[in-house]
Length: 590
Image (cartoon, rainbow, N blue to C red):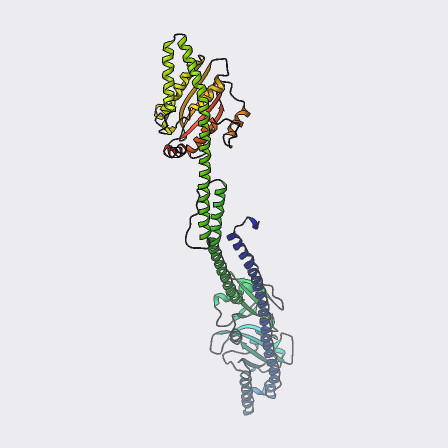
């Protein structure tokens, strides 16, 4: 596959081979780092949640111990006595001491909370929140031996949510407050939990929540209400265990949800961490990495383009030039642009091509001159025979007293020799060449009575300039090889027409003709160097036609509809000037 690529494509391919593994490895490393960071964040968050849950449990345990100490206080035990309701100084001192103890206890912890001590036996009550009415019916409707989340009267008026738990003396699990001696109510405002969530979120991108499937969520003041509702919807459908994490969608975005169950019955500490905050730095570095890789690729492509323009294109031009020379186009020259390492090479190539063209043209023209000279020599040998035949015909007609035939014959003969012996120009009009052919045919017609001919060439083509003595040899070939050897009447037709930018002159006869394989053999001989034992006439005409037309268009041989041979001579219209110049060069050298 690489063998089919050019230098530019190979450089791009090598750049891709170098950069793709780096990109794959870095991308894989980035994904692994993302997973590791995610796992570390999950573990860190769960550890923080466990710590916070332990704090909540410790607060619950401290409150429990403090409450039992309060229930064991001698002054608290006095509330069970019916005498406590009597307006005595001792009773006022006991009540004052209990109120002071409750206020001190409610403010001695990290959280402020509310305490209420009630005796169902005497209906005596001491509370830190004077807005809430405590009596036996209250405790019958609100009695919780474990933490419960309720909406109660707040100290400043209105309603607020509290975590409530009741501790009794004696200890009981029965929901019968009227049978107890003392009941101590501990009410922790939910705002304390919200404040704890706010502190827990400091310096973190997570949204911490305290969640219960029945009571909803407690969020920090920084959490948007709309976001809190979205979190609640997600938690409502989630299956929470004692502890864990999962990837979930909130409002179309991926979040990492970590959760831990607390000892506060049914409550979970939940964290929502947007995944984009985890992977944002890594994605940022990954984007920079891709940008740098793309920049390197562009630099590599630019480098490849420079190499391609500086090296590959000149090499391609040089290869093109070599191929043109191989095809025989020695006139091709490489265009030299700017100064480069290839300047000298191109100059030498052009010089070599020019010298080769000149050498080939000299050799080729020399060969044509030799062939033409040989043809002239052969014609000079043949012409006496033609002349002897003519003299014999004149002698015979004279002896027979046919004076008119002699006069007509000598007129045609004189016109024929006047045309062939005129050497001032190697080019002629087609009308003059056809006049020569007519004189030649008339001479033979008077000698061969059975010979007839026909000449049909459009008048608009008669003024075209063509090489001299180029049609007559073809007609002569038709007579010598086609008509003279047959006993029947002979017929020769010379016609002309215009076709595809060429003027086509067709010479055909009704002679014996040639077989198809002989036609192919004759056509091939026109394009190979002539051998000594072969004829020169048709080959010479073929070469002169190609030189005149400036291409490979020469003689074409076909089977004639008349039965004999059909020969086509094609003359390129509009190319007379070049043909004249080239033909003159040959003729002047003779």
